[in-house]
Image (cartoon, rainbow, N blue to C red; front, side, top):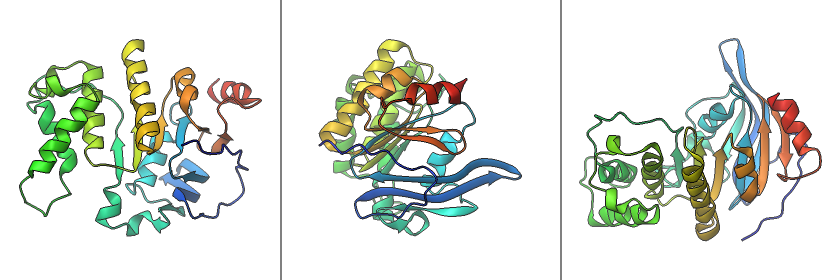
Length: 256
């Protein structure tokens, strides 16, 4: 389902609207005396596909962690489905899935692929309750979707970086999320597997109508399928269509 692409006025304070999956309103985050994010205003409608770009140390991962409620802003507020992130009940929190920045998992890490994916189902049962048959069924379903079912019994540390990343995406998907957040899902991967994972994310957005936020340094691939591009450099310097006039100039000035 295609959404209307809107150019936003960056400095104007946002009002959270009905139909927003995520609303970031006037958020500032600091680490001691260091400003990580400054007056971030961002509203994301249900079903939008948002690409976030910016140079190193521009606050991209900090923004994700703030949206997830892992970091408290010194100013401003994050709302998810209209509720402050700190007040979300477990049922709504389970609708948000996060794929952290890709790092090669150590070869000697003993967990099998299927066990890593099943970790995504914890939190759906009562504390200490064993996994149920539907948890295993969901694990198999998502491993098949990402093309990793045949590797389910292999130690995850024995797999390539691309295979590990697909397994981590499957771990996110077993939560049956409505919002999927991915932090550099293709970093340090070759072009072939980068394209596979990018296409997989686009397929998830299109077929499951997920709200997707992805951070990616590969601007060419990032801009192909997203609805909106957000360029971040501690504050939002651009928010709008990925190929609008002057976007290339803004990207050049931000990165170089």
